[in-house]
Amino acid sequence: MKKYFVIALLLISLSVLHSEDKNSVLQVVARVSPLLSLSMGTPEAFDIIDSNNNLISTRMVGNFSVVSNYKAWKMLVDSTYKTSASIGRLKLDDSETYIPYTFAIKAGEITILSEFNIASLIQPITTAAGASYSLHFYFSDDDTIWPQGIYRDTLVLTVTTD
Amino acid sequence: MKKLFVVSLLFVFLTAALFAQESVTTRVTAIVGANLTVTTTMSATTTIDPALTSATLGNVTISSNLSGGWKITVNSLNGGAMVRQGGTERYPYLLNFGTFATAQNLATDLVLNRTGIQTGTTSALSITYSTAASLSLPAGTYEDTLTISLAAL
Amino acid sequence: MKKSVILFLVAVVAIGAAFGQALPVTGTVTQVLETSLVSGALNLTLAGAAGATVPSSGAVIKIRSNRPQWTVTFLSSNDGFLNPTEGFTNASAIAYKLRATWLSGTVSGTIINGLVDAAGVTLSDVAGPSISTTGNGKTSADGLSYTLNALVVLPASDVAMFEANAGLTYTDTITVTIAAN
Image 1 (cartoon, rainbow over the protein chains, first blue to last red):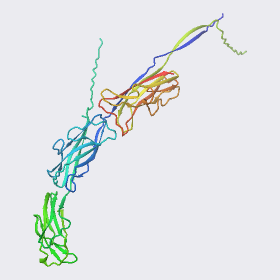
Image 2 (cartoon, rainbow over the protein chains, first blue to last red; image 1 turned 30 degrees about the vertical axis):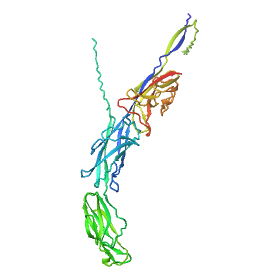
Image 3 (cartoon, each protein chain N blue to C red; image 1 turned 180 degrees about the horizontal axis):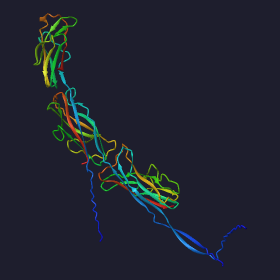
């Protein structure tokens, strides 16, 4: 008996189906850490009268630096011995003798502040190195003989975004 | 029966400070140094008339900002006399210093001790002397040097 | 007694089919071209010394491809800048770089390092703005994983700093796509 072998030819076809490309979406989120700082060394003591015992009219008292990455910030100054918004006083140690003065805080040649407890002109964002300001005192001589000694005032400088 | 679980999500928003502030305190120190000043209307050289018995030297204005003691010192180079140039003859005189001293012999320094602040105070200086003839002084030029100085005590 | 060795010869004769019949068998191979965000996020806190480079937290991106040639692209929505969100009044946008560092996986037995320049590429400096790279070879089934970072260079000491505003951020959106070449 013959045996028949039947061999089937298999046709195999493959097709590739395109799936939808899958994309990813990411958010990049950055926050800027706020900075607001003020640094000032202790001003050096300065002579206030000349050889004729007259008050020297102008003195640059010291410099200070502010670092701020707030868009708009302001400065304020207060004086321990002030008598008004515009007049401060230097007090003679161990005495009730006072020398009055007016003052200005300047950015370069521009005065940004000249009254106590009244906010300065709005200041812009600074560089990382900071913005520099100078403190100036002004005296008006009236032939008063000022007693020899050390005269002082304490100032509080504040920078604020409020 | 379905059970529904309701989950409440509580969001607590912590708002960062809306303002920032920083302050520094600094002391401003000014020095008023000791200041003793003397100014004068006296000429560098005053020539007196030996036929007279007095001469005005001029004014001296003195101020002080010392709260403590200080002094005025008047010194005569020749101890209260004009000395003839090229010789040793002495022509004595006495000093009047405003209200501080009258007919002061300057054989030794005149020292006027003061205390406290003195605003500019002007004193007239003059001298009194005998006429040259009465002293039988030889002819010549007689001179002395007066120095007025201020110092703290 | 005789001993006999009997050898069985076995011949297997393939007999040709009396007739053949084709049976179609159909198979389907699904194309795989995909990217996925595995973990992490690109968050930056901009603080530090002037001129310093600040990296973001890392996001792990996975790429899978059974196509031999493919290109993956990172596309910025904001022209390569982190834009200030609503609330700022006049803040400037911030340029930033993008970097992808190989994490795991192979491509036909070869690891591709540095999918994107290891130092990061400033997106605002390139066309698109986008960064793309071509892969030669199919990835493993687990795909290629990269850690993605955004980097920001802080302003120099003599240049105005980035504006701060409590609660507000600067943002961009990166779309990662993959396509067969």
